[in-house]
Length: 145
Image (cartoon, rainbow, N blue to C red; front, top):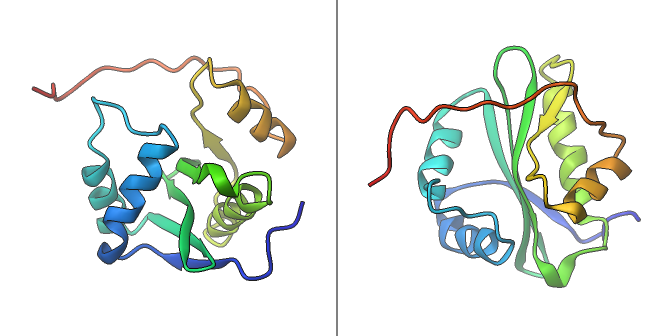
């Protein structure tokens, strides 16, 4: 489904932070071990990343954080407000993220999805993403208190 014609894309600025954090909260993207405000700070301070937001009818309805680690692109915080889903907004956000990476000659894009998030896994499958033949491992370098 194509996105609504009056969908407006913007680069994040700090004036958007409260609305953006509320969007991420309602979309269940915030976890106790991740400080989303710090994730935003790191993104906007890094020239190899971008935080895109989208508005429909004066309402913040979506976001995507995109970046490059020097070898591959990554997307984070892809969010579409529940009342705005199934209107093509998620596809439009991903198309913007992909174009951001294409413009920088990044050859591929990755997304981390929680294994039990079947709706999101289905969304990415419809966008031609495939399961990678990798296993994610992690190590905490800084413990949150």
